[in-house]
Length: 99
Image 1: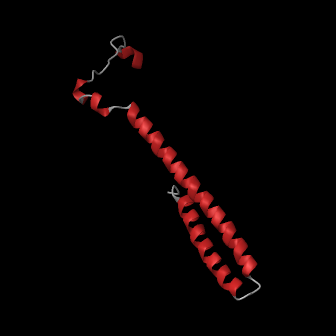
Image 2: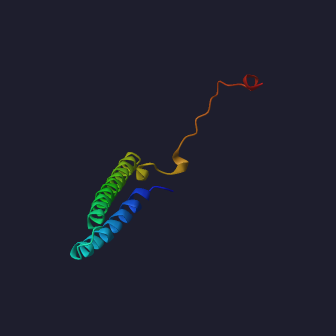
């Protein structure tokens, strides 16, 4: 359920960072006193969003590589038909063993 949460939070932080950096440019041009705050928050959000997005993509690539390795271990084409398999039975057991 929460498999893609890191990715979406990272993208959200990147979008928020772009917004804060845009506000920073506007306030800096008008020489308002809050421009430093928006610059710091924008840069911090950008760094956090970049890290989260990078980690999410890296984990997804590792998961896909692991699944490909597992799929290569089980070659379904060589398995044959289900009817070809022999069902093993134990002839040494008697009815008295189960009472």
